Length: 229
Image (cartoon, rainbow, N blue to C red; front, side):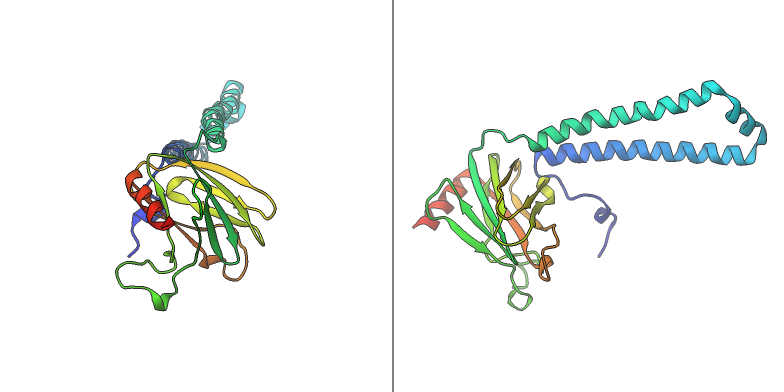
């Protein structure tokens, strides 16, 4: 059942996504105040002709509402530039994950460990269990990563352009054939995060989901040992 929560973003699971949500909420409040103020001014001008004449001939007022939008844009620009810098900054990673986009599935390679690589396909509807899988979003091999760890992801593609996107983490990276793109993220809580390819990459574009399982460091190390053995 649809609720009002569907109109907003997913709950943040990384510091970067928290900053993005904070910036979005502040800009939305500015937009709301501007809309209310302009609506009031337009309604006043239409109703009262004397105010209309005053507003059209008042030079100081024209100067104010010419400079005021420029000041508002500055208040939006500086936090925006800060966020763009933070999104592009790749801190010293503790773990590197490489993902390769295919038509229409993802491949993952753990560069810091030997022989840990697998393909991740969407689970078909007729093979889903009733309680453990989400239709069109769950995969047969989830990407297990440790929380509270700086993770670098290297993204590329084998055929056409894809886009590796996980909204809860604030991550969206284009997978371009013949090119390596990278970004980093930091998961601050254990959970399962879902994403999808955000580039129209063919007929099955909507059937190559992404599933990140955020676990504790000890659980992750045990998973690595069990996978290697």
